[in-house]
Image (cartoon, rainbow, N blue to C red; front, side, top):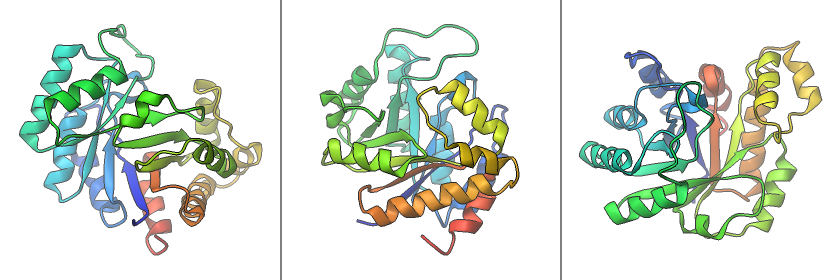
Amino acid sequence: MTFQLVCEIEPPTKPDLTHVRHQIGTLGKLAHSFLIPDNHIGRATVSSVAVAHEVQSMGGRSIACLNSRDRNLLGLRRDLLTAAAYGVDQFLFVYGDKPTVGNRTSDLTVRSMIEEARAFSPSFRVGAAAGLRPLPAWKRAADFLFVQVSFSLDALLRWREQNQVDVPVYAGVMVLASRQHAQRLAAAIPDIDIPSELVERLGEDRMAGVEAACEQVLRLRDSGAFDGVHLIPVARYRDVESRLHNTL
């Protein structure tokens, strides 16, 4: 199987898809598919299903992320119905970050979302996120898994060795745009381990985060342990495309 690059798109917070289209156009020849977050980091964005449809209208393959935080059962059924009408058939179900406004709903879990999608349509492909810890048995029923972002190749390889599954597994790789970005990420996600030397390099070289992420992608490919990577380029998608264009 070809090593897959799943590029995450930065969804718009305003009713304008121009920036989305530019990301798709820039990364289109590099990415095998695009993941569209769902109100990521707890702020409102254009519907992931709508952006997934936009990806497909531009000739790309899409995975729409849906979180349990923002919807009840009726809301999930609405989103699945809308996705089916748009021809969107791949989803990543997640719990969702802490919202910046409003409250978290408690009607759904990722497990119940998977069960609901399976009942709605057998043609849907549904994935789940996995932390760097033992994989719960019910997540093995997913069609694919996205492993959390890690800056340690060894940690990812240990997790893969300890969690044998027969579905595609994609390792998380994130571009750190600056030292401040790294510090915010470390504060928001205490269990993420960002090498101190990388943080220092970010203060001296604006391309350090891009280079580190691209090197991680290539090391993961060469390891043969994963089916691909889930790459989060943030605003540095042009630099990522330039760096990886002739190497993947």
